[in-house]
Image (tube, rainbow, N blue to C red):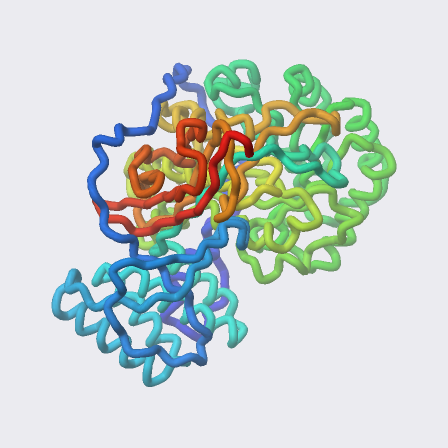
Length: 591
């Protein structure tokens, strides 16, 4: 995989560094193998909750106003009211907050006199010309300097809206990502039994998400799946690896996976180009061998076709023709093979052009990675990016008709660009991604981690030795992963029985909900710092403070007085509330 971009330099030259960030955000540095190292013992799990007595008073949350249409003129500013009533729609956009607009705050002075002046000048400029995208960006940057993050979010989103109107999707994505990085949002969820499923795709669970990994080259595991289960605290339902087109079906590997109740995901790569792909003896033999194996096979043929770094990055029509050839043979000869069509998360603009059609695809996949710096370049930091944002486009486009698989992902815990251990960055990204999937993306039904240290791979080209994605060579990284996949929502074996019981899934807690018995609440949080604290309150009184995603609260409602109550989650950064969500519920033993 190439690590540099040949993207055309766009008209708006001031944005090119950000476009480079976007273009590289999900590129995968794989096809590598790690060297041997001593095994690491699995660490004990730790509780994330802190005593309520330790909770300090927090200020009223500053909510994010929604961006108005770009044709609307900004009204004169006023100080926010003392108390702000928000309207929440937890299920909107699979967990994104919807709030009523509120007045913008006055300048705080946190950025100094020059920054304060820049905010005032930026506000005036956008009032004079609401269609000036550069004015909105300058206002956003000035607001960040003054710590007026909610206003900065609005400014960046207004800029992004202008780019979309002009057809500049790349520019819009850059500014939307900047807005996300400074936003503060919380949505409350409650666990409830999974609803009856309709027609399911091949090997699709009715609810929950398979966990998977690439562990063949992990020196502490070396394909020993029970050992990997001991280290991570869970068995895994899928194991994946790479195979060149032209190699035989890996029957021995499939047998090892089947022995622990797992299936295999094959990243099948035509590295000599699509010219060799044909309905011939090789392809038919591969399909028959796959069928003979019997185990579930997810066949990810020619993934990341939307980039320009593979041998199969060709015209969409030529790609789709080759895909349909492979899918047709598998459909005819290998009923245990599920075809996985998997673009890279970025670029987005050409993804749909490569889709071969619903009848040729069983699952839709997506690849992306969380790195501390893009392209091994100290000038292109990525430490403010949330990996759970990256599958958003693929999910919105295809989840209504296909189950989604995160085919390969990981987060680095050592970055060669800055030469630093970034273990806390990795732990935070694990929490962000695995905590978000059940809440934001319930149709993501599988996720696979790339468990390889690229830094020590002697067989990799030097430009690929940039990040350590291994789970098992860091006790703290392993602990974070163990904690996130411990919930029953993450499935450790492939479910082939449609009548098998399904795990509970989080759904948005709406006002008016009736609750009884023991209830598990959780929250999805976006904040401009990596480790926010969530304070749970009942009728204004603190119940629990926790800094561990997904910020769980187990509530025994039988101990509450029957009748109406208000459940509230407050996000705290630096002793100050930055976001809140509240739901009015009814509690009663007879409910």
